[in-house]
Image (cartoon, rainbow, N blue to C red; front, top):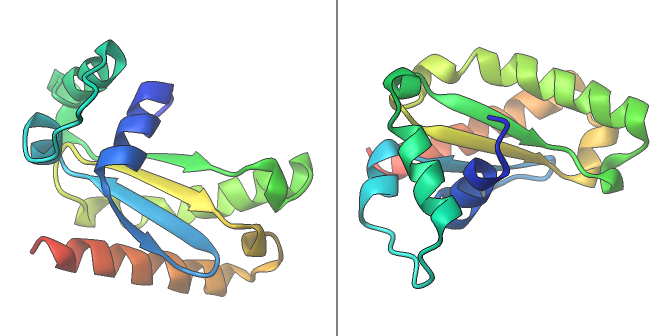
Length: 132
């Protein structure tokens, strides 16, 4: 994911699971169409919902938020690369057309790779069990 409105839609309407190193937001395709009504309909929310239904929308997509509170640019990019690699292993578990946002907490800067992997897997398990 690269568009701001997709990130906003996922964070505001998706389900969330927090862990010490990451917070994961998951928005399933059916949640963009109905179920979670926004009292303030906006053009960017409609655009993001439409983008989730485009022809290549069957593939789940992921985006990452690694803010300045995590560390300097070198640290943020290291955390983002680690998270991207970890999420790639779990994309096949996500429902078709879903959007996933992974936000790194400041503790992710000093976390070992296996700690990030454990937190991410635990958060994904919780989110996928919630609607199963």
